[in-house]
Image (cartoon, rainbow, N blue to C red):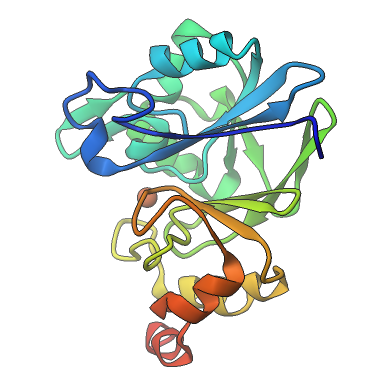
Length: 231
Ligand SMILES: [Fe+2]
């Protein structure tokens, strides 16, 4: 749709340039909304919240919510490897909006951010959230974490750490599950058409690609690799 507002922002390049670590992690943050109503959501706000809010303001948009693809602090902020990443908590201080997260990751979010469950808007598989006239669908894609989600916006899929252009999210961190990841990639993703454009959570191998190409090029779709994940 022509009124779709969709921005992909790379940490350390498009925002957070002054942050000492942001560039190393290669995180993508997304702004999605409706150019007609000027409303947008931020997906995976982390690293430099003031910069992200400045971009939203410079575009003449109003932030109405934040979505997390999953609980990891490089996506929603919190305590990570001995240091603290800005994210959901900083956003609440500067520009309070509802913080949406899949219910399967709520307890992990509480632990890494210190937020209470009451601070979160809990989402479930298949939920659809309207931002102006733009609809964002929550696809529950566990494996990287129990509550990992991908967001479908028209023909685009904001995939978080479920799928990169090269590889997929690791499954050895708390809540990770290789069998669930294999079911996500092998079964849950099978309903998505080849022309779905994947927008990943990290710049691992590139910023975007059609799913049909990844089904050929990304080894995680090799049936033997999926079989190994299933044990
Ligand atoms: Fe992650």
